Image 1 (tube, rainbow, N blue to C red):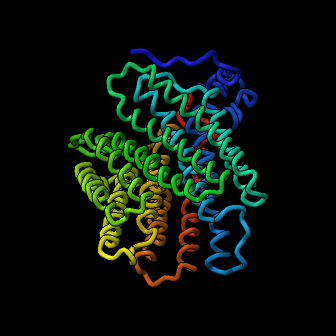
Image 2: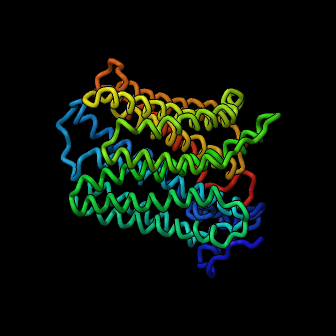
Image 3: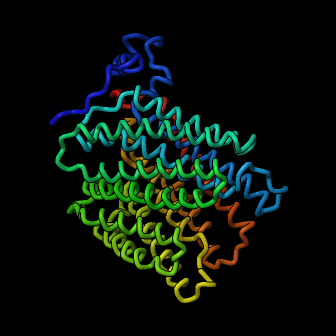
Length: 436
């Protein structure tokens, strides 16, 4: 089977890789600097920027919520509606760093390809990070800066996507189904981010609405579902015995069709009929959660975090289905507000980032694949974040002025220490002395 080849390496790739004994051979002067360690593997730099964005995006949101909802001070005058900024910073500014870091690490394994060199992932990561930094500046300094921020993000995203597509194209592996779906999701995500840019340029809220729908349902859902489909049974088989891997491929077509149907019905304003696709998707999520061994996974925390995160997909789809049925019964009284969206975005997507990134970071830093008490507690904090944001929209007697900022605070109290715990591993050598 052929491996992907890349162009002649530049200076970054020509630097010698770390190996056991190198530090002893060359002394202090021979130690790899922190920036070279960040360039040793795609997940290092991408995950670091993702961790910074996980804190930065929610910190900005908390600052906004304290003014608009808690009335701690007067609402701050951002250059665009806060809800627009919140959606973009998380959908397109937080999750993509982890997705690219993960897929640039796994595609060579899935497709028997060459490892992605720094000349490919470093420029992509830096362009995306520069785009997000300029976006924050634009929120304060002026809307005119925001289209440029989106362009930088799209440029980095495009470089990363082109690298993944090249690995997929050159691979002779017979089974490329997981890679095809994740590549499709990333391609649609690029278009969704571009739609946000069009909305900024034209001042048309419809493009912003399209961007959010595409980002959640045609980008994040296919990618997170596909990664779960590939990795949860695999990781479960390594921990649970006896274990039979259940990985039906017919679900790909059903989930993609259901996701497309959901966003189409939503954009057309046909909320009352969305249950026709939401409830079948719910059945698939429940089936997979059961067959993958949710209950048995609780015996190993690092495995349980993946199963519990995936369970939130079923919770979200149940809420979406009930919301649609409520709209069918009474179009003037649609229930649950944004509870289904936050069950999906925080419960499934963000929780899965915590679980999957923790596992990848531990495994690729040469450390035991065990979720310690701190990691487990911080993961539970993310579950509390999801509940705090979902329950008020389900009728919990908790005022938005308290509930929404509190949810943001719990996010920061969970993600902040988690980032502080794992981020240093990205600029340090592997504990086992191996390269990468």
